[in-house]
Amino acid sequence: MHIRIATAQDHDALVALDSLARQEPRRAGQIAYWLGHYRCLVAEIQGQVVAYAVTHRHFFGCAFIEMLMVAGNQRRLGVAGALLAWIQADCAGHKLFTSSNRSNAPMRRLLERQGFVESGVIEHLDDGDPELVYFCQCP
Image 1 (cartoon, rainbow, N blue to C red):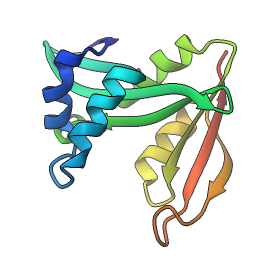
Image 2 (tube, rainbow, N blue to C red):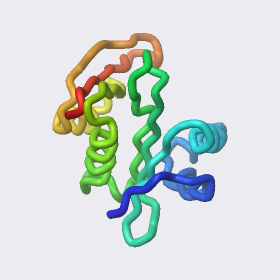
Image 3 (cartoon, helix red, strand yellow):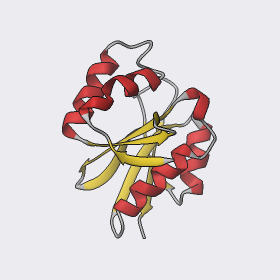
Image 4 (cartoon, rainbow, N blue to C red):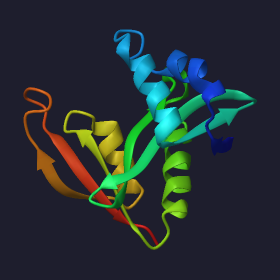
């Protein structure tokens, strides 16, 4: 697996692997915005983009993982963990936050394995499915 900074040329590959982009046409524009304004990483296996992550520092001045998406056929194979580890190493000595819906048990387990702890709850984003905020002090 190879992790690198994404470029605008990765847009179509990110849209293709993003499960929400198939149902929500606005997602392609959001991905384009992230590529132009935030730090985006891609994970490649044998030259094929299989996952991406988006980070920024607009969360009270701290690093925040806005999005972590893995292609459906690559889930639970360590790709997301590798992206998180890369981001944690990049944030060494700083605070790192992210969030996940309460219903997303696989993501919550992954975050806990990577050393994140629950830090708060945001209600009313998705009806009946609170957003859990997670924190990690990167070593």
